[in-house]
Length: 207
Image 1: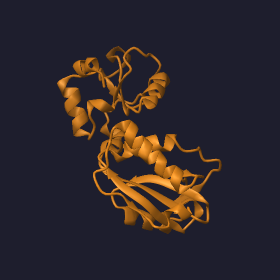
Image 2: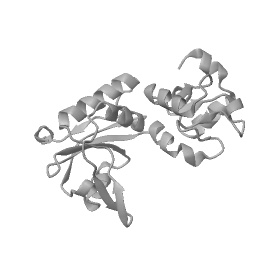
Image 3: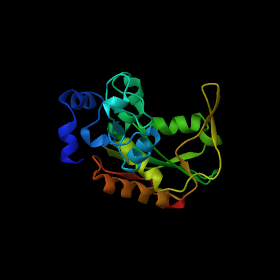
Image 4: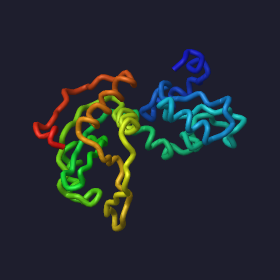
């Protein structure tokens, strides 16, 4: 973040960000941009989770919003997704031989997550194998950026959860090595180093 934006954020705004597990680094300066979609798009391209808007474009007078324009100071529930990006956790890679797909996600408990993937037959498969995991201070940020380096899914996949079908996200038709390189590249571009030793399955190259 530039020094000028640090100067513009108030102490209350900085304190609010910290209370949500975020920092000024996560803020995009969108004050000069009138269009909400444009602010959100540019913030996404800059890998920023929160947008600083001109208070004159706000009904409540607050300046911090999500990329979609929702005030996070009025409703902290709107920041839940963004807060996950700023929280420590594991970035993992799982693979399904049946689907020929790779899943890149984040979790606080990798083995419980694996049980959930198979127990819920995620994307219609129950043969998910844990292939890799490593811990980062901002796991969600690494995950999101890594996704942008992977090919977009070419087919729609669903998971039966909570009594109905839901879209299965974070699943890619690629190989393990592509997913691994995407995570490494994301961490490098974000300037983040792992906070734990990485674990990698001896069978990872078979996926």
